[in-house]
Image 1: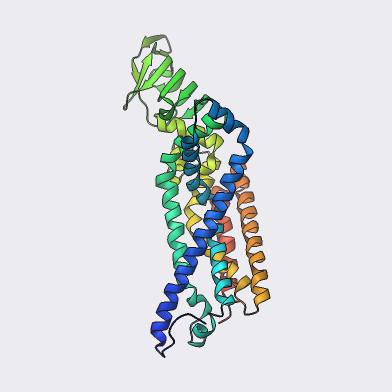
Image 2: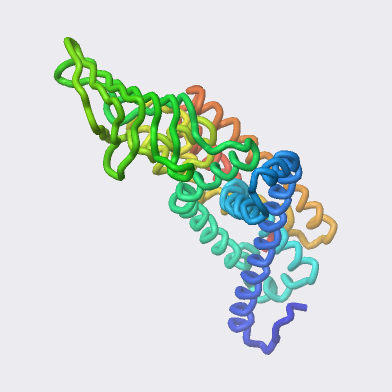
Amino acid sequence: ALGLPWLGETPLMLQRFDRYVLRVYLAWWLVVASALCGLFTALDLLGKSDEIQQAGEQGLGLLDLGMYALLQQPFLLLQFGPYVTLLAALGTVTQLLKHREWVPVLAAGRSALRAMAPALGAAVVIALALSATREVVGPRLLPQHEALNRRFFSQVEWAPRDLWVRGFGDARMHAGAFVPKVSGGPSLEDLQVFLTSARGEEMLRATKAKWNGHSWDLEEGRMLFPGGEEPIASFVRPGLAPVDVERAWFARVRPLDLSIADCEALLIGDPEHRQAATLAWTWRFAPAVPLLLILIGLPFVMRFERRSSLEGLAGGLALCGVYFVVELVARDLGGRGALSPFWAGAGPVLLFSGLAVAACGRLRG
């Protein structure tokens, strides 16, 4: 039934079983991830078919649409990763039970939890890879994805307006318009920067500013200070570079796509930024979430009655929903200041850690 040679060499059989469980788990993970990401991408495109048609009339083609869909996949995986990992583990157990492949392994003295160790290890590696994707890949792809999103579904170039950015210290910048690099910039229009120096409160004003790689080159730049003003040709200040302007905009409209580094940068300029502090703690604990969900979900399916194991899949889906709601509520409370950022970000993980410990005691074998 196991599909492996039973030659009395129990260690060899168990090693092969480990590799077999790992292959089955990875296959399930790819299937579930492809299904979820493909479904949500298709629904997104179908719901915006009219806008896509209008974009096609303005010169955007299938290649651009394919690029948009491709850029969307990492963000969907980051959003659904913990639930994909849980459903893949539940599918793996269900498949092994269906083909009666647990019996020889458990008879050889291996516990159910140890038998799933390859899947648990793979879940940890995948979770760490997703966290690395959030930190390294996400910030690089986010501007390109947003630019294509605006071109397809709003028929405009991505150029945010009326932006406020907090730099390091007490610096604050307002821009009437910002043109990102992907839209032909970086440049600013109708720039105002509020500063404090030895001369007192100062305000820099410029009609336009273009980033030269090191500083902002100003057009009609003037520095106003108590008792006078003076012309200024260029300006640079920590926390007010183009990447900081983009980050401030994404923090307002797409905060869940920020990385830990983004959140920490926002907190340097604004230590009271509750949402950034909450998200930073959420993403720090995120690699533990898939493993906890698996440990809690395994008892739902790790039974030897076929009917109950299939019913356990429904329990696993319900578990996904419960965790999603708990995390959503905690994150909202953290953003509103009703919970401290630490408890809002780490609270769901700590709560489900207790449930995981209890669930492990229910595993048969």
